[in-house]
Length: 307
Image (cartoon, rainbow, N blue to C red; front, side):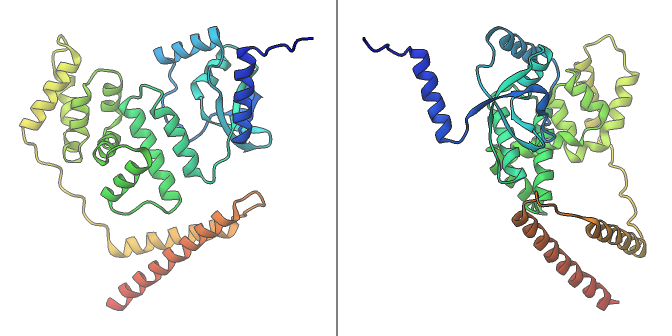
């Protein structure tokens, strides 16, 4: 009896399975209800045109690419790549989705994977990027890896995201805008050129002036053009920035700092690191705490000796 020739499809499928096994990434079908949105994901989940395209694709062709997840404990899985596809699956009433399970050595590695998956596959808004970079900065700070110098911070984040330092700084500047101006920019009522200009720290005192100009103007003209005119007028007026706030009383600062130290001490005493904690990572973080405390002790001693 002649041997049956395997189909191209089955051959490709077996090849993919073998490759996945070599990389310890066997694809599993996981229940949609067991998947959790990643709290580090700050990219927009609005049901916009991009989402509708994803929804249509999943409905017609299924999942052309696997969801990437990481263990979240107790039979739960945290999404790393595929938030919109999982959202589409939920909307379509699907009970399970194909997933690759990956484990990451730390929070930063997981965040980098999350950002990398989105940076190259989606049309991201500048505000999506700004919020995601803010999350990256927070994680670096939590892990004790964030430099104090602002430019060094931007350089480090640029290395993590493969963006330029200037681009990182420009995105982060957008976080300076107040709620009204952010809503205008995200809603297309202000050009991004004007948004970037207003977001510069030296122009923050112009926000109320621009808003007042717009509120009193004739709304017959195109709104973005009106905002542009308001920004140009406010800059041309060369309005002086508000006077700096008076420095707080030194003794009041010391008192406030003492209360903060007592609160932190109480929290540390109540902290319990269970068996599931990464002991090596915990030791490193505690060692960083001790180093910071030693630096604090020296600063306090120097201040005390100067009195």
